[in-house]
Image (cartoon, rainbow, N blue to C red; front, side, top):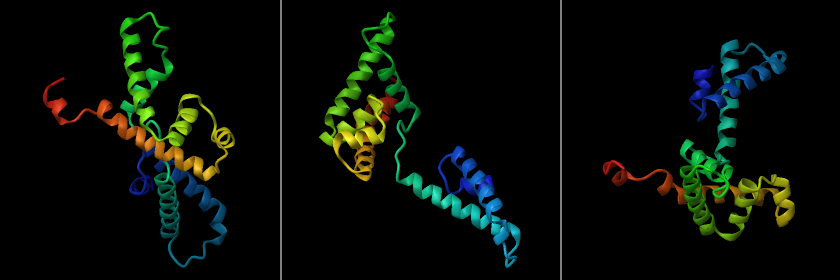
Length: 170
């Protein structure tokens, strides 16, 4: 079941959730099994439907940070005060990371930047952002989604250097 679920979803942990959700659905609906197919076929149909639903839901969201490199850059910048650390290397790295993130944030369109900063930097909930900006829940999600995508694109050249950088061995 895990192997089948993994064909529909991107992450292993999501596939595990799909399998668990499938078993819950089977237990809740076993009395509806009519025997028109084998139990295995019925079970796998529930699994595939659950996996497709989860895949479609995941496509509508963009996780942040999306890659380990994004997470590292974001973590260094947000969790370290450049002026507050005694380690000069860490202070320099944090200052550089903040500079990169700040330039990328400044390049975002205004409302996207506001939503991303409130959610990611200040840790506001979606409901708090929605209330503060006077936008619908759907609009807040769209602004956050587009802002994260754009931010990821802007940070990509810094976090994931191109082939020329790799060929130079730096």
